[in-house]
Length: 254
Image (cartoon, rainbow, N blue to C red; front, side, top):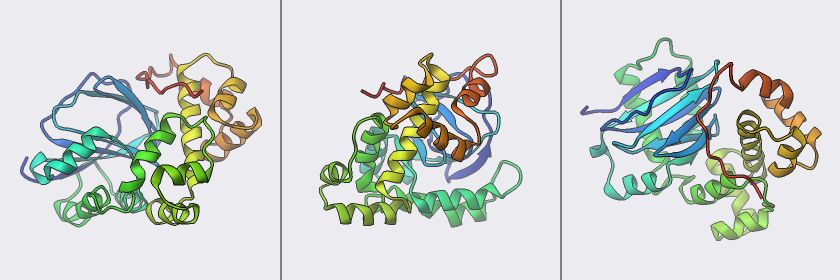
């Protein structure tokens, strides 16, 4: 491949491990994806995507109503530092500009995206994850939050991790994601809870407590607002035998 290619894809049932010689971004448009990359699992949704380095083994399982933007790029399109950085932290908080680009493409029919559209939209993606990208300095702390959303994450702690003041942190999050730090944290807690509902036998009350919700009803309200169902309904719809999910290996929140 000498140039980038965009495809709009649905995954569905579990896949076998795949490898390819190009770099790849996976950007959810709707639904969610349990994604395993070189034996490490994560869960993707419209706020979180993943970068797959060339030759990295990966497998995935999606919900029934899913759709994803898949961007294939030859490694020659990246400088060594950018490729190393993305490979070292492949699970990515999706900047607002990337989410907006994905939604523009979501309206397209079929799977393959025309070359003229790729040429227009690819710079958005490349810039967003460059060293100068608005979200780049926040990716490390976003990854820490996503790994342990049940911990206490006051603004002061997040700001200290980034090395800025609380007011500056709000400005950075708004510029990068069009979200506040606490809104990003809420998305992480809900994503973690959905994974646990599917993959564990823990009670809903226990999942809510470990995810950092004040009480079970807070999780219920959040899930109903974002996904239109209660935790019990979500668990019933998404657990096997309706579909076998890739084990996400999401760490348990202390």
